[in-house]
Image 1 (cartoon, rainbow, N blue to C red):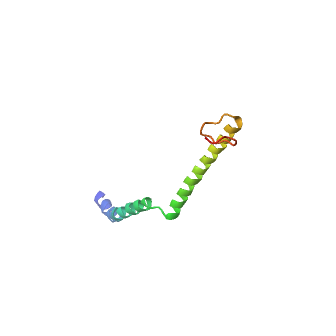
Image 2 (image 1 turned 90 degrees about the vertical axis):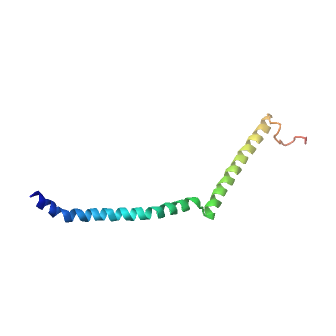
Image 3 (image 1 turned 180 degrees about the horizontal axis):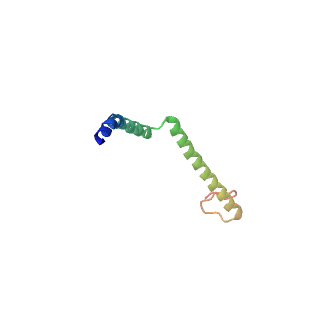
Length: 93
């Protein structure tokens, strides 16, 4: 009885096994292609991405210069300027 049951299930199981093996083979074959394309995408940046990054850096530097200028003006108004500050009314050194 067990033999008959095993023979009846054999065609059903073989289809699953073959399907799984075929999927695995496709995954193994496409894996190197996917890995290389992901590496190329990560290694190359478009010109627009590079421009956006440079623009962010320039805006950040400009904001920092503005903060430093406002701090210098405040020190000048309070009369506690640093030696390197350029305050209105200072004599040239």
